[in-house]
Length: 102
Image 1 (tube, rainbow, N blue to C red):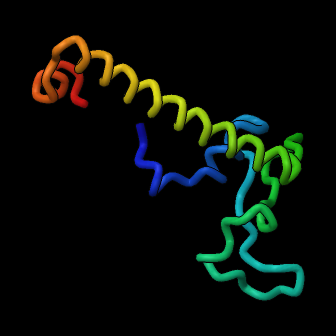
Image 2: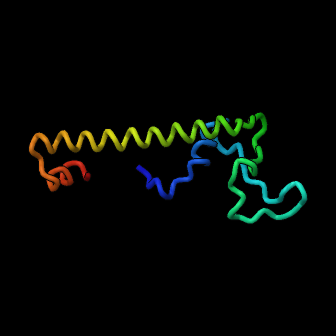
């Protein structure tokens, strides 16, 4: 699983709408001012670049982000539970690491 600290949940969520390569990030605001790179990747700065793509609402994007994060939590919970069950059967940490890499 990807390192959650470095994950870009906004982009992961956006990629689930309209197929791939449907959006980009605005480079200038409505007044023509350059948007600094560290401020561009926000919902407010999404621009549609694929014909026929529709903009999901911010609520839809936030719901998708929450879903992705919940799936991560469920996966981590299942891994921890499975690991503990194997330990309860007598496997050592070294054995678990050897057979599962965990």
